[in-house]
Length: 183
Image 1 (cartoon, rainbow, N blue to C red):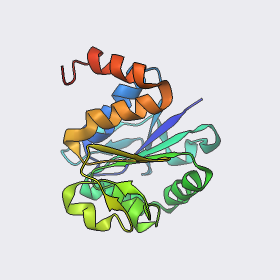
Image 2 (cartoon, helix red, strand yellow):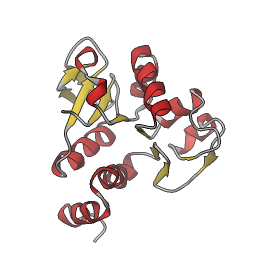
Image 3 (spheres, rainbow, N blue to C red):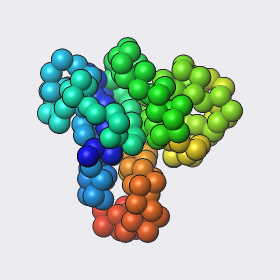
Image 4 (cartoon, rainbow, N blue to C red):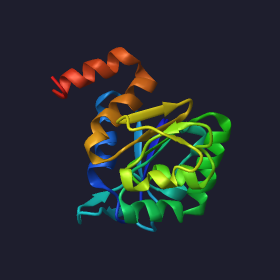
């Protein structure tokens, strides 16, 4: 059963997407890399092509506990233009299930009204898109079931925080040590 789905559109930010996948998989979390395109191969903003586990239409959202949206300017636009994904983002939010986004992608939550009355962060030039939010400058901001992060440089703290939400603080601290982060 998949617990986390990370969604990929053409132009995704490679480090933001793959760091989350890597940390969660190392931590024993089932993660599917999901293409919102017609193919299972998606090319990132720095011309790195990645083979996905699934296409969007193959995801069982009933068995998914978190949706993760990586950034990248073009990738964020591609995710936001995928209406079936946006319907799932709204449904997950309304059910209190986790939704997470990094860099430019938290702007999607702002555009959908999800951030009203919440703390949230994003890439600095996208902070104006965090509509209704109290803008945080922390590397990762958790507001109930909504998790946001600022960019490529915060990808590891973002992945560690997502691991902590599923496996606890001790597991995240152990992973931090294992990957020699911030020691």
